[in-house]
Image (cartoon, rainbow, N blue to C red; front, side, top):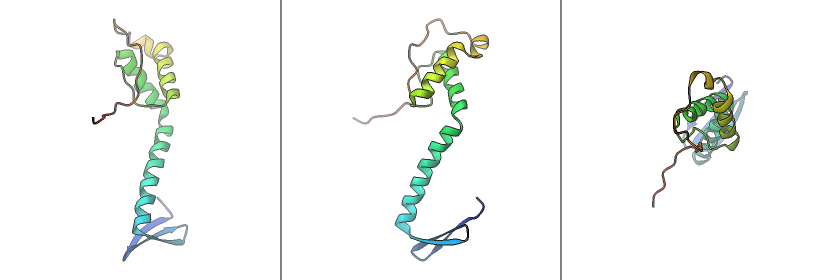
Length: 110
């Protein structure tokens, strides 16, 4: 990352962005880093959505009832790609097709 540097000075975190110094308490720096990571992951998913759609379509064609996203738009596009895309030519549907593509699997503690 050009133009940004981070340092620690005692209990403060110093953030240099575009030549300007921003001093943060360590608590705020941890909150900021968590927020940046969360938003960065969302941006990554948006940037790689074509690959996620194709991977989910491959799973759907193979009869696996799950996908890599909970986004309804991604699931709809993956289903369309699995049914009508280039995968039809190279990957036949299984004999017992799945009816639904689920989102990301989660674990619930009872």
